Image 1: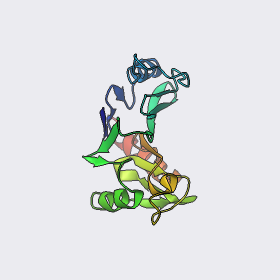
Image 2: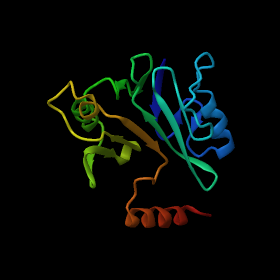
Image 3: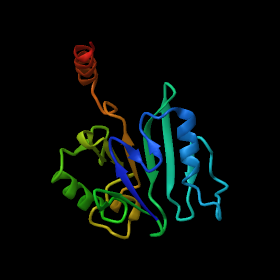
Image 4: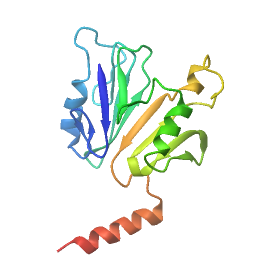
Length: 169
Protein backbone atom coordinates (compact mmCIF):
# COMPACT_ATOMS: atom_id res chain seq x y z
CA UNK A 1 0.00 0.00 0.00
CA UNK A 2 1.19 3.55 -0.65
CA UNK A 3 0.99 6.35 1.90
CA UNK A 4 1.46 10.00 0.91
CA UNK A 5 2.71 12.54 3.45
CA UNK A 6 0.77 15.77 2.83
CA UNK A 7 1.96 18.51 5.15
CA UNK A 8 0.43 20.55 6.64
CA UNK A 9 -2.68 18.34 6.32
CA UNK A 10 -1.40 14.96 7.51
CA UNK A 11 -1.48 11.38 6.28
CA UNK A 12 -4.70 9.90 4.94
CA UNK A 13 -7.36 9.91 7.66
CA UNK A 14 -4.90 11.43 10.16
CA UNK A 15 -5.34 15.19 9.94
CA UNK A 16 -3.06 17.50 11.92
CA UNK A 17 -5.13 19.43 14.46
CA UNK A 18 -7.94 16.88 14.70
CA UNK A 19 -9.21 16.01 18.21
CA UNK A 20 -7.30 13.24 20.01
CA UNK A 21 -10.30 10.85 19.99
CA UNK A 22 -10.74 11.22 16.23
CA UNK A 23 -6.98 10.74 15.74
CA UNK A 24 -7.08 7.52 17.75
CA UNK A 25 -9.93 6.22 15.57
CA UNK A 26 -8.13 7.28 12.38
CA UNK A 27 -4.96 5.54 13.56
CA UNK A 28 -6.91 2.29 13.91
CA UNK A 29 -7.79 2.53 10.20
CA UNK A 30 -4.12 1.92 9.36
CA UNK A 31 -4.30 -1.60 10.82
CA UNK A 32 -4.62 -4.57 8.52
CA UNK A 33 -7.57 -6.55 9.97
CA UNK A 34 -6.19 -9.77 8.50
CA UNK A 35 -2.84 -9.38 10.30
CA UNK A 36 -3.20 -7.33 13.48
CA UNK A 37 0.09 -6.93 15.30
CA UNK A 38 0.38 -7.90 18.96
CA UNK A 39 2.72 -4.89 19.28
CA UNK A 40 -0.04 -2.38 18.51
CA UNK A 41 -0.92 0.10 21.23
CA UNK A 42 -4.16 1.59 20.02
CA UNK A 43 -4.29 5.29 20.57
CA UNK A 44 -0.49 5.49 20.24
CA UNK A 45 0.87 3.36 17.38
CA UNK A 46 0.11 0.45 15.08
CA UNK A 47 2.28 -1.85 13.02
CA UNK A 48 1.29 -3.02 9.57
CA UNK A 49 2.31 -6.50 8.29
CA UNK A 50 5.20 -4.86 6.37
CA UNK A 51 6.62 -3.60 9.66
CA UNK A 52 5.58 -0.01 8.88
CA UNK A 53 4.87 1.71 12.19
CA UNK A 54 2.36 4.58 12.30
CA UNK A 55 2.38 6.63 15.49
CA UNK A 56 0.46 9.68 16.63
CA UNK A 57 1.57 12.43 19.01
CA UNK A 58 -1.13 14.54 20.62
CA UNK A 59 -0.90 17.59 22.84
CA UNK A 60 -3.63 19.72 24.39
CA UNK A 61 -6.20 17.26 23.04
CA UNK A 62 -5.18 17.61 19.38
CA UNK A 63 -3.05 15.68 16.90
CA UNK A 64 0.19 17.58 16.45
CA UNK A 65 2.51 15.04 14.79
CA UNK A 66 2.48 11.75 12.90
CA UNK A 67 5.53 9.52 12.86
CA UNK A 68 6.18 6.61 10.54
CA UNK A 69 8.83 3.95 11.06
CA UNK A 70 10.54 2.28 8.10
CA UNK A 71 8.87 -0.94 6.99
CA UNK A 72 10.88 -4.14 6.84
CA UNK A 73 9.44 -5.02 3.42
CA UNK A 74 8.39 -3.15 0.31
CA UNK A 75 4.68 -3.93 0.82
CA UNK A 76 4.14 -0.40 2.14
CA UNK A 77 5.71 2.69 0.59
CA UNK A 78 5.75 6.13 2.16
CA UNK A 79 6.06 9.05 -0.23
CA UNK A 80 6.39 12.80 -0.05
CA UNK A 81 5.64 14.47 -3.38
CA UNK A 82 6.41 11.18 -5.12
CA UNK A 83 9.72 10.68 -3.26
CA UNK A 84 10.02 7.26 -1.57
CA UNK A 85 11.35 8.42 1.81
CA UNK A 86 12.28 4.93 3.06
CA UNK A 87 13.15 3.21 -0.23
CA UNK A 88 15.82 5.69 -1.33
CA UNK A 89 19.16 6.18 0.44
CA UNK A 90 19.00 8.94 3.06
CA UNK A 91 21.59 11.02 1.17
CA UNK A 92 19.41 10.90 -1.96
CA UNK A 93 16.28 11.91 0.00
CA UNK A 94 18.18 14.91 1.42
CA UNK A 95 19.50 15.90 -2.01
CA UNK A 96 16.04 15.79 -3.57
CA UNK A 97 14.43 17.66 -0.67
CA UNK A 98 17.06 20.40 -0.93
CA UNK A 99 15.60 21.09 -4.37
CA UNK A 100 12.27 21.89 -2.67
CA UNK A 101 13.15 23.64 0.58
CA UNK A 102 15.76 24.17 3.26
CA UNK A 103 16.78 20.94 4.97
CA UNK A 104 19.44 20.95 7.67
CA UNK A 105 21.18 18.47 9.93
CA UNK A 106 19.56 18.23 13.33
CA UNK A 107 21.69 20.14 15.85
CA UNK A 108 21.96 17.23 18.26
CA UNK A 109 22.16 14.47 15.65
CA UNK A 110 24.01 15.05 12.35
CA UNK A 111 22.66 11.78 10.88
CA UNK A 112 19.14 13.23 11.01
CA UNK A 113 17.56 16.15 9.17
CA UNK A 114 14.83 18.74 9.61
CA UNK A 115 12.92 20.46 6.81
CA UNK A 116 10.91 22.97 8.88
CA UNK A 117 9.22 24.64 5.90
CA UNK A 118 7.96 21.23 4.79
CA UNK A 119 6.99 20.34 8.39
CA UNK A 120 9.05 17.13 8.12
CA UNK A 121 11.99 15.61 9.97
CA UNK A 122 13.94 12.46 9.15
CA UNK A 123 15.80 10.25 11.63
CA UNK A 124 18.28 7.42 11.49
CA UNK A 125 20.45 6.11 14.33
CA UNK A 126 23.75 6.85 12.57
CA UNK A 127 25.15 7.88 9.20
CA UNK A 128 26.39 5.17 6.81
CA UNK A 129 25.94 6.91 3.45
CA UNK A 130 28.70 4.82 1.83
CA UNK A 131 27.48 1.44 3.14
CA UNK A 132 24.23 0.16 1.60
CA UNK A 133 24.50 -3.06 3.61
CA UNK A 134 24.23 -1.01 6.80
CA UNK A 135 20.50 -0.33 6.34
CA UNK A 136 19.94 1.46 9.67
CA UNK A 137 22.39 4.17 8.69
CA UNK A 138 22.00 4.13 4.92
CA UNK A 139 18.23 4.69 4.91
CA UNK A 140 16.09 6.85 7.14
CA UNK A 141 14.44 4.89 9.95
CA UNK A 142 11.59 7.31 10.60
CA UNK A 143 9.88 10.42 9.29
CA UNK A 144 7.84 12.84 11.36
CA UNK A 145 5.17 15.14 9.92
CA UNK A 146 4.23 17.90 12.35
CA UNK A 147 1.91 20.85 12.83
CA UNK A 148 3.02 24.32 11.73
CA UNK A 149 5.27 25.79 14.41
CA UNK A 150 6.43 22.41 15.73
CA UNK A 151 10.03 23.08 14.72
CA UNK A 152 10.08 26.74 15.76
CA UNK A 153 12.82 28.06 18.00
CA UNK A 154 11.54 30.01 21.03
CA UNK A 155 12.10 33.29 19.14
CA UNK A 156 10.21 31.97 16.10
CA UNK A 157 7.36 30.76 18.33
CA UNK A 158 7.10 34.19 19.95
CA UNK A 159 7.08 35.87 16.52
CA UNK A 160 4.37 33.43 15.34
CA UNK A 161 2.22 34.28 18.37
CA UNK A 162 2.69 38.01 17.79
CA UNK A 163 1.74 37.61 14.12
CA UNK A 164 -1.35 35.59 15.06
CA UNK A 165 -2.31 38.31 17.56
CA UNK A 166 -1.97 40.95 14.85
CA UNK A 167 -4.42 39.01 12.69
CA UNK A 168 -7.10 38.84 15.40
CA UNK A 169 -10.11 41.16 14.83
